[in-house]
Image 1 (cartoon, one colour):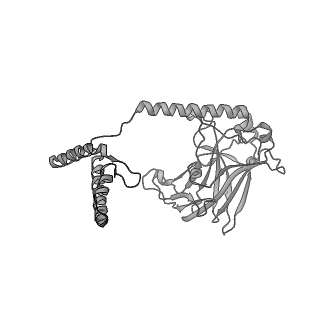
Image 2 (cartoon, rainbow, N blue to C red; image 1 turned 60 degrees about the horizontal axis):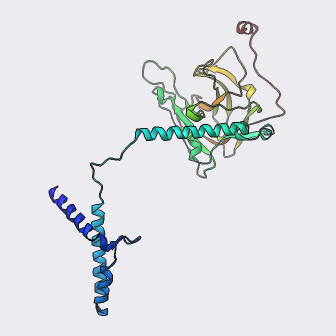
Length: 326
């Protein structure tokens, strides 16, 4: 260590001595300002090749010394400012809050009201890049000790998302779980400034619209409301999506009136319409108890207004439940 310290010290002194006579070159690294020009005047033309080679060797030598001096000590650590990070985070959230206020003054979602009212269809989720995949979460029965696997990636042409994996209905040997075998894909809840929970407003639409390509397996489409005070975590609205095998795309249209209320996968006796102005997330679940590989390719997920569909709600409660609900 002592010899290395002396070598670096000597290099630093030598570099300081030549500082007034050298200058940085944008491509080579160092060039001689005064000394090099005087040397070329004193050398004869016959020795120009050998002198040029010596000059290049000297440039490389000084360049290596320059690099050696600039080595950062391992003892030095980058300075981290907790206050600076907090300040930047607060500034970013206030900027997002400002954008939300401006967009609200313009109209719903920052668009003029007349444009929103005339809208008949809308793409909510599309898959054209990695930033679109970041809006989703994949999960499986591995969280409870199962063996199912699920993955999400972009297709080869970056025009759709491919959801694939392997379903395994073998129950975990933990003494508590008796059933297993599910995989799911869930959209992230939109967040506003200061991590406020936001929701989607689909009151002007009446149908969920998807363009998918599957392997013939049935999926459960789940919609959750942003009503934490009156709904628990495992409560949601669900309906079935049957895919066709083969290479062709299919367009799936599910009216919102068909979605039924469930809790932990069990259909409830009391059924209520979906609150379309409080939609927080949407998801897809595979749990058909057929072990093996699966895939589902998704182009986009949107909503639209079907003028031919006039049904308000497909289910009704018994008179006894209606009296109890009152």
